[in-house]
Amino acid sequence: MFTRRNRACSTTFVLTILAIAIQETLFKDLVQPVNVISASNTASNDYYQRRCKQEGFKPHPARFPQALPEFVINLCTEPGDIVLEPFAGSNMTGRVAETLQRRWLALEIDENYIKSSKLRFEENAPLVVEPPADLPSIAIENADNNQSVQLGLF
Image (tube, rainbow, N blue to C red; front, side, top):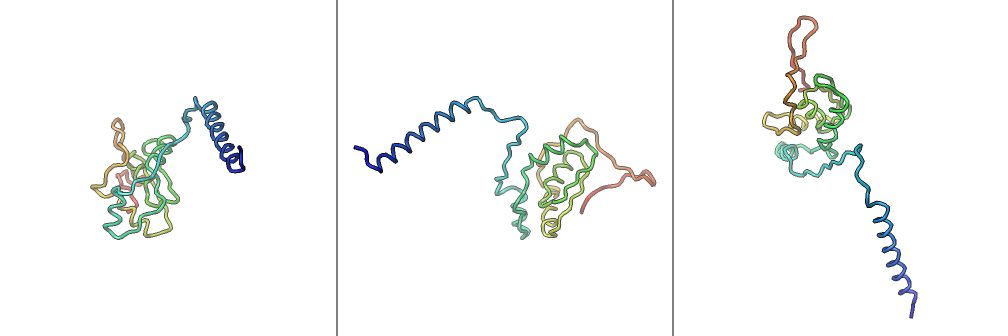
């Protein structure tokens, strides 16, 4: 005997089975496209987070996973090029750019985030990407007197 409640449960069950069948039929051969970056920012105890806590800084709440700037920097620039980051935040882009032998310029309106981003560039800070082994060191020359100069934000 079908009551209203039994009918609703039966309908829900049938719809669930139908949804599973459709999903298995339509999406069984679906693979992730090559133009999608699969990266997460779930690190809750990385070097940057620990150092911010030690120094009393509030870490930037929306930090890039390193894979995102690494992909774009490798795609759009060559070693020695300048990477512009207009919203630096914790400056993951600058750290990745420097490791990949790019010069960088980062802008950030919040002075506290600039201070905390310096932690990414400490001597004992771990590299976020492996630097390219086959590229020569890049020297920037001063046009006035051909002297090498050190570029940096800090």
